[in-house]
Structures are given as C-alpha cells and as structure tokens.
Length: 358
Image: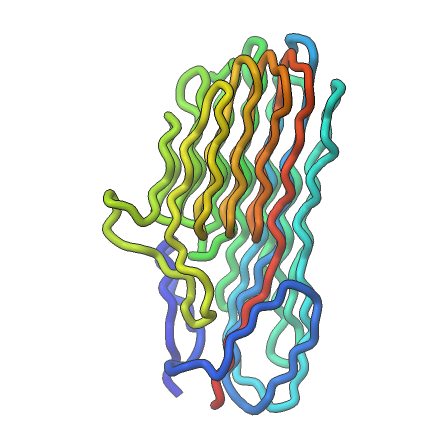
C-alpha cells in the first residue's frame, strides 16, 4: 500500500506517517490507558513527553541572581501495520510542577517533566520529559533544563532546552531565560540564551516550534518568544506566525487531526508590564525584565515555552507563565526585591493516534 508522508520544515527530513486516505479514527490521550486495535490496519502514533519547569531565585540585597528555563519533552512518531486485537500500553507524563513560590531569599530549581510511552507489538516509543531549570545567586554559568530524549520512532526529535546563561562580569542582576519547545517539525528549539557580555537585568523568550526564543544582544533586554515560522527577536520582537509579514503556515500532521500550528511568539515586556500569553498553538511567550515594581511572563496555550523573567528592586508580586502541553516554563530571578516570585508549571505530555484499516 502507498504511504503518505510528512516533510518537517526543519532538518529536511521526510518521514513516513500513514497510508494515504482518511483515517478510520483519531484519538488523543492525556493519561495512562490501554488501546486495542479494532481490526487489521495501519497505525500512526505521535508521542510527546512533558516539559520541565524553570528555576526561581530571589535576593533582597544587590547580589547576582540567575535562573534558567525548563526543557521541552521529546517527540517520537512512527507508523506500523497492526493486527486486530493487539494491545498497547499508554503512559503520559505530567508536566514538571512549578517550584515553590519564594517570598524570602532563596533559590528553588525547577522540576523535570514526566516521560510518555506507547508500547506493544511493533511499537516501543519513548519520549522523555524535559529537565528542570537551575537557579542560583552567582555570576557563574548556568545551563537550561535539558530537552527530553526520543527513542523508537521513524522520527525522533529531542526536546528544545531551556535557555543557557554564560558566566558574566559585574553584578549580573536578575537574569532569567525561557523554556524550550518540543520538536514537532523535527527540531526542538530552545529558550533564548544570555551571553557573557550581559551584566544587568534580562529575560529571554521561550522557544516556539519553528524557532528559538530571542537571545540577548547588548547589555540587557526582554527578548521575544519563538514562533511557528521563526525565532524570536533580540530586541523584544516576537517570532513569526501567521500574519501579514509571513508567506504561509506550518501544519502539524493533519493525519492526527490536531491544531493548526500557526502562532507567532509574543513580544518581550519591560518595567511593570507583563509579556502576553501566546494564545494559539506553537508560539513561545516573550521574556520580561524590570528595574522597579514587578512584572510577569505569559503562559503558552500549546507546545511553546514560556518566557524568562529578570528583575531588580521588586516591590510586589512577579510570576512566570505556565505551559499547557509539551513545552518548558521559564526561569525567574530577582535582585534586591521584596514581595513574592511564583513559577510556572511545564506542559503536560500527550499521545495522538490515527488508525486506518488495511
């Protein structure tokens, strides 16, 4: 029988997914289950691990603080012929829990997301959860949470990592990076990174399914979230989705009947503002920095990572946005602050099936 194909936009890969023609049914799993093949036919499966949460750190004095975003879950895709009555065990990972809110000085690392799996005759698909971000009061380098592993498929995409922070000179007040995004198109994109030249408050955008969160260029910035079509900007501009400045869309495998992956990331935000939620599928939310008052980063509705937050002289409450599915949440770092700093949870894993009689 002829096989349909999906050609991911990243990496130039061509991946066999399922026979051409209409699937008998499509089904989404968000928890553990058993699936039994109703008859002989072709089964396509997409497995996504859960995202990790970013770290948090709060200091009430003028010391260096930094926190990195969580990694995204891995993605595995495979098609195989199955026999009537074959049974498959389904496990779906939970998103990494948000670290405990800080209202006194301290640092809390993020939590890893859980792995997802689909196992039975002809399938042994394992999509690992993303790692939790780090947090510390230091000028030393900190790595973002690692992306989840991916094994057993015709297409195996490691999740995007949380943004890294290089060793920096000076006080390096309040630096937070964004979470990663799952590799729905073959490459998992990371949250924005911070180079060693940066020595002041910065928050980078979360990764999108089509590009990384914006990395800081210069002394400090709130960078944009990655989008479905490209990376976020270093000066706060969002990554592209479907808008007047783009020429097309990117589709998730419509075989599975899931959302159109179309969203832009969201822009970065400064001083008392909040980076908005990325309300469509695929985009990451922007980073946020402030030098007085408070701020927050938006969550993501589906797959993108949420932005990181960096602040100085906080008075009030600041927060990191949660992620719904797959992506990692951002890290938050506050110097010389009073009030509270709350983290966001990583996105939950999921499994998608499409079955066609053969």
